[in-house]
Image (tube, rainbow, N blue to C red):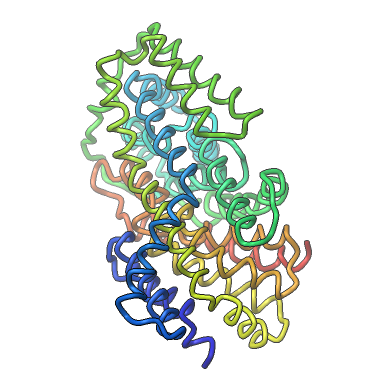
Length: 444
């Protein structure tokens, strides 16, 4: 009963329910934080008004926890928008689309997964390449009778696995969130600690990819030969310009600066300066690029800030230690049960929020001390935290990991977002991630 009535438990349950009911994630986080803060304050004899005011103060002061991450998101989003504005990503997507013709079905899907991987780390354009590359390929997919559910899995793999395992681009942001939240909650960790173990989760996902391509969706599937809107691809010029050359230099600068500094915000800023100084983006277009960056990444950045505040509110209740002790006692030292509960809660939260990045600060406050109490090593804690955050991203109807593939594959109206993207990616990635995390955490 102590576990069920704990302010932390109640607030997390409220968060899960509100998110799953599709209430805006910002509203869900704020309401859940108020629930935790008021329950904690009332338990300490603080009046309702004072508890609410104190909670809001703690919530807003906690924004600084993820301030650097939020800035990195906005700058990286602006960099991605600037790359898209030059047309370089579109040109590369169009050429790759042509080069893929004639490849075998399985080989083609593996190539698509590889291209998607590059969009997360080397050239951080995220899902922007999909509406350019995929629609022109649909007629070829139809002729080859390729099951588009397999294509969705290939693209989702490339949009997800690299940021879990590779500390570049979006991967640098995700891994920084992991180790900084571990450190903030009493378990000192570094970027190398995360990168040294998270590759195992990527291997679990790769196994899911191979099963999807060579087993589940290897059989031919018939589609109607319908007209496809390829105007986005047709409008792309094949002429390589000075702006494209400057953009390539900017991408190289981002990679070079990121290696020694391990600061994605700084490296993205340097890349943007190269593009602005080199006139790849005109001076009077700079405001438009930042507006575009805020449009595609601003919401996630703000969610990250509020999630940091939510974490501070949870800590301020003083109920974490009591919950950890009660949970550890209820689990009776059983690490398998603990790992299962941790990943299941992570799955629920991420499915509702739709962002693995935003899930970490919410979960870390409870999971880090719980893992420590249960005797999990730091590598095992990293694996469980990373998996708990990533679980649900593939399969969530609100996630870019599923929305991106559907945007390209449904260009002719023959690809259902839920049944052809969300369900297949949920099965082939969330199940291997969960099983892999539970097993790996027992042995490292």
